Length: 180
Length: 450
Image (cartoon, rainbow over all chains, first blue to last red; front, side):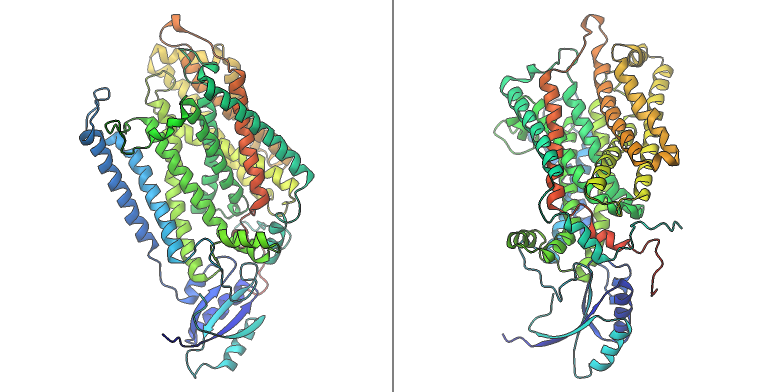
């Protein structure tokens, strides 16, 4: 399989106001935003990039229901079916006493399940080599990565727009894969 | 809106990375080595004591037929309580949008994990045969299978603590990934680069990841908030579901949770004030942070004080003479000294935090937090020992005093806690850099507002 070369146009910025402004402007101009890199979560950047919501909360809910469901079934099964032991004459159906452990297992499934889903979904895997667009995006730099999708991509006006937002550095890069 | 800057010194994000990462570079100071060796010696003492009591049996403790629970369970509840502040700061205050939490949450979460480890040790050795600890886990076994009794609060406790430890660890690690990546990207040594590269999971600051990270953080905070309440509630049920006067009361869950937050907050403050001075974090941990934490101590301390009063009122109002006896015996019996130490440290001295000048004098704050730590340890001691030592039958009344082995075990748990904490401050950024960078603009006029 042959891969197509993709051309990327990168702007490096120094403050959160600049990256927000540049990202907003790029989106309004209809440019293709591949990604934005930031050392911390900048409030409002997801809107500027036009990112849609994530499905992680639904996954948390599903895992919570699964954990609680399995646990409550397991408690009834062990207490009343598999090997019933009469403890102080307490009823086989001790639902109120089963609730604390059910709650804990629900939280355990939902929490660890969602963290695992996040790590796998974002390909955050131990030992994976980080691909940084430019050095410093984990420190104090912000990078906006645009893709030069077709001939109509106007470098000059984009560079001018970047300069309005005090761009520190502009890089052009050709890669076989998106920088992800 | 409060316009006092959260972080002083007009820092830029680059300054934050430098200030915090620098603490991990270079050789540890002589002070660190001294503290580490002291902690390690205590840990060694604890290891000897635990080995001895496991080899000999828990008859080496000061327990007797009447006082069947004392020192060990006191330490367990004390450490679990300490752990609660970490989750409170990282999860509950996150939901309440308390931005000052960013300077202390990393250390508080670390403290939670280490405190829960210390706590877990005590039920383990209390079993007498800790090599059978896995029997608490309901696995298919060759004994029937004989399952655990899910109606027992001790089983609830096992699940609560195991879940709490796992979720806290996940929360802590998740919060650390962006900072580990920052340390990786400035590391010079090959080994540091490799290790940090391994644990930072290839984090590159992509905002597509950041957006999901923020959602995940919120979800975990939402899960951890009821979790932290459930954990100490379940610990209190270990006592409240019994029929012992002094234990069998419905006030226990809120009373225990408030006490846990109270003691944990005091421990965080104790540690952070030391870290602030020795690691020169004055710009990051300011009057605002200490002030907010002392106010939380004041609030929870007052709830604890109210709980003490409510217990007495309920005992008087119940008309139950056994209940009344237990409370009078607490305040005026052979353990009155412990009771009044507890009241002095938990109810009276924290009231000084009403005064602004006390809140802003860090030496004073430090001393008062030590008092709270002592007071909350005594609260558990009073609660457990005084409720047991004079039961329904005067013929079986007994006293209790801890043996040297028990004291050594307690010291050992402090050794474990501080050893882990000192290792933590050498290898991991003590302040959540990625979070602090996000709050730098608070209380500062923006140069070019967007």
